[in-house]
Length: 296
Image (cartoon, rainbow, N blue to C red; front, side, top):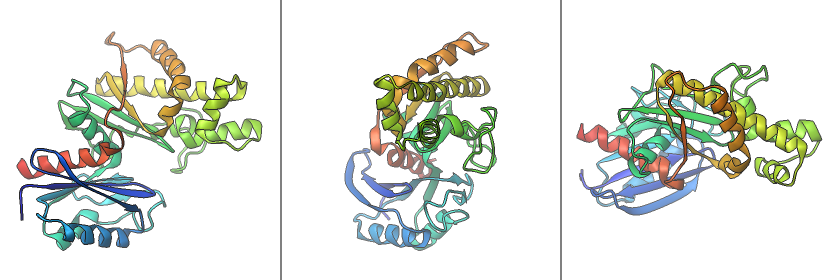
């Protein structure tokens, strides 16, 4: 086994991306393929690692779903990856590959990638991914706060945002107001027009009242949730990533209104920053976690 390289893997609902880095952190190889079912994913990872020379010292994985922080098991996940919920990912890969494997929730890995490569200048960060859903993670003094089940800072599933049904089975979660899926659904319900989040944003820029109102609500509820999370964790720097950032010019004023409506008791301001690392953030964050695990 070589100590010279570490492999990072970003397992998304449709695509899986690999990044291999050397001891300096320089990227020396990339690989991508479609995301398949759980068993096939393991076979593809094992096959790819078998081609690598030198053999990696460790693997870090960022994946969709809630991850058991102690055992690297997928506790809960959507049906985007067949067989993923309950899958013993770390145990199976370590047995097949004979090297340490670290498994993180994808938003945790995203935040670690931003922390290690984004130049945000603080060890305390709240990370939010605005995409089809809303994911969250929190870093305090440079360490991820994971909670007992690995679901700390999952702000998308905080209740208190109305009574609409959430895809997780709950009601009134932030995702029902601010997720990309919710924005598109609420616009379609109001207008009868099928649309993506970006379509809604374009309509809002053109003055469509329904689009403006849906996006204002999404932005305001997001801002309210950020105030709640900032109060709970005493972290005031927020890094936001994800596809819904394409509508940030519309969401931002409403989000700012919420921040002013619900000021922090400390008197501090919440600073919202855009993600800087791009599509590599999850894989690079997973590498950061794997390197920390093998170096202590």
